[in-house]
Length: 233
Image 1: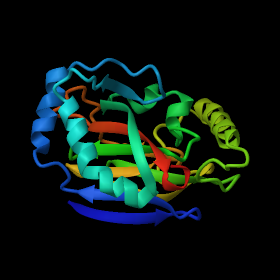
Image 2: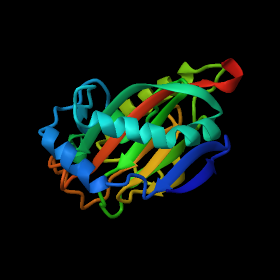
Image 3: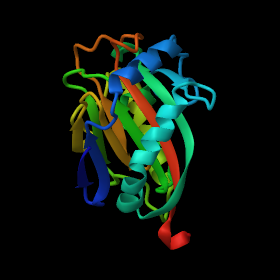
Image 4: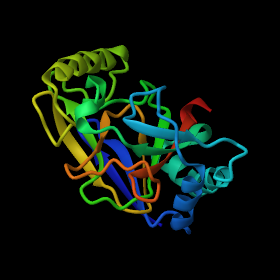
């Protein structure tokens, strides 16, 4: 594994990028294809399909192997005494730009909680795609303020409503509401770790095909873990 630690934005929040992560990544694509077709995601604003990985799925071994390999990285990068898995899935972006809702056209946060760590595993090689992180221009926020954790989420809801009325597509590098502060290009078998409270968005290129086929689409493995910081252990 090739591990790179990036401290991004004014908050100096850590984003970990690891290349050549999984020993047999092509087999993961086949494991995901065996679970297709994926259902539409309805529990979050994710613009596409998501298949939860349950304990009886063959792919559950992948989750265990991934976390075993990432355990020292999670401990070191996020000062974690220990952690627990909260969710694992395979996902595919399939919603075309003209069909997006306002909330899907802006960056988002996964949680107000800085102890929720997102693990994103790219299992595709689509040029121009990736994950970007942002600062909200009006407030200067890149993540929720601990003193008022709900403020950023309320601001994002307002921006989503405004942008929905403007009928725009996926968020780009910058616009009048958000400034991009970091971008990690997607590469096959690249994995990223970051706090779910960081404002971020998938970057979708203009010529994207929105395929629902795990062998052809923007397939990702998505794992969330809840850490207990050393200071609280």
